[in-house]
Amino acid sequence: MDEHDKIPPLTLQPDGNVTTFTIHHVGREHGGRYYCSYRPQARSFTSSEPSNTVELLVLDLDLPRPSISFYPSTIALLGSRVTIQCQASGPRKIFYFEKAGNQRVQQFETVGDSGTLFFQNVTRDHGGKYSCSYRYPPESIISRTSDNVELLVRDPSFSRPTISLSSSGRPARGRTVILHCQSQSPANRFYLHKSEDHMAEMFIETNGTEASFPISIGNWGHGGNYSCSYCPELESFVISEPSDSVELLITDPALLRPSISLEPRGIALLGSTVTIWCQTRSRRKIFYLEQAGGQRIQQYESQGDRGRFVFRNVTQEQTGYYSCSYRYLALFFIISGTSDNVELLGLDPKLPRPVISINHSGLVAAGGQVNIRCKIQDGSAKFYLHKGGDSKTKEPMRSDANVGEVSISNINQKHQGSYSCSYTFLERPFVFSLHSDSVELRIAEDTQNSVPLSTKLCVAVLILFLSLGAILWYKRNKGQLAAAKSSAKRSFRLLKACWVTDPDRNLIDGGNHMENLSPEPDPPAETQYICYFELEHRAVSSPVEADPADSSENCV
Image (cartoon, rainbow, N blue to C red; front, side, top):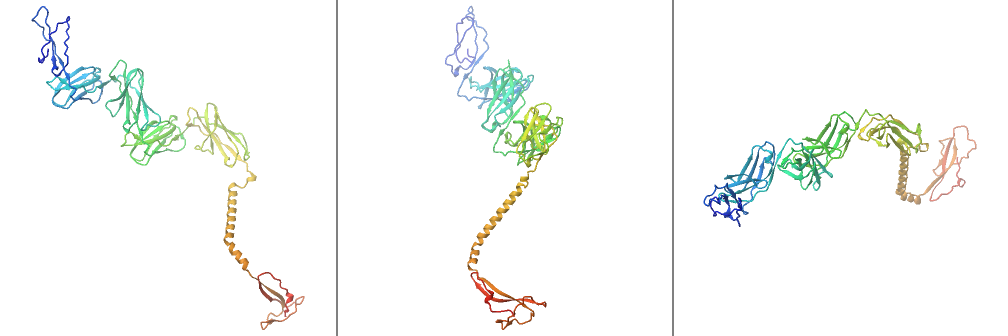
């Protein structure tokens, strides 16, 4: 029977003590509250008290669906307070909240466009899936239900899981990263959470202790801090506390790569202090230091253009390869590419020093060969050869267990010097021993090649330049030389010598004749002078011979 008698009461002959009333072709008019009563067979006009009422709400598909939300989050700690809100536009309404399988939790009437349900002290039983709907009173027409939203209850008595991130290469747009979550005890479901979201990011059904969440990075929004939790066996909506968070940073190849350096440089004594600097051009960044394969170990916020990472007591575990990267403070989860690697090497003075030997004593002939050997007592090691005690320059030696060896062939002067060696154990490849004592390699001088090659090269270059200079001078003056040769006139003078006793004597008469003087075979003892007279002066184009006998002039 309808509580408001919108439809006439129905009477059915019971089949035993149960009767079913069926309403065919339900319409808006069928909505309302119903109750029932019965009449014993022996008492035809006496009926029982009415039953409790049930409400028949008729669904109207034309009404807008409401939305449902949880505050502060869809994950609540045991004993905390949670608010569930159902919202729909329109005038005065009655809201209905339902949990998991149409179990109506609460209904109330409100004059606003939202209805609110409070849990003042969350218990395990509050966990589940919730939805809501509404109707306009006094009509019994109801809207469709909202989406289902899960309320998860956290129990701090469960052990926390662990989370890790793995990626083939650095996370970048277009790549896929995998987040691994692991629990100590078996679970039937794992949840992935993002710190910026109040809802669980995703979940995976399982019956083990581990789950993997693949994330395809399609945009910058996938960057963030992620954690995970799990739902133990025999539980449905009660979960553990979250794991520690892992940061997913997305690499932007457009950002400039930083540079990295060590201070002090070289091998660091174990127990000493080492500073690693990461530097770039601009300011206000967070710098990240990574060790061996992308394991991020430190971060440093800087208002300047470089980050400083200090190891105050270097241990063998801290040795290895390091690189760094950075992100701007305003770009929360976008990071630069990594710098080049820098190698932090440790020196352990407690390691036994190796012993070095050379298979040749005295001078080594140029072009010959020597073998240098390095040895320790125990253990398998990798050996290195150093020249002149330089720790930075090291040449790997052929290592065989506790012995290292290197052969130097075609010996020349550049090989001369002192050599030492050091080693690292295979299980500690970045921790070096002290250097061995030194051995001296001396090269015998090659007499055939005593002149240094550099001097020979200088002489050859000088000769080449002189030859080129002579050729260029000849080519430049070739024409002038030919012209001078073709037009030249040769001149000569034929002179006759005479002995003269008196230098003041007039030897020329009238300027045209010469006075004759017969020369004596032995000149007189008094002061004498020799005088030359021009017998003939010619200018010819070819050589001629002048005969002194042809001249009739004599000395006077």
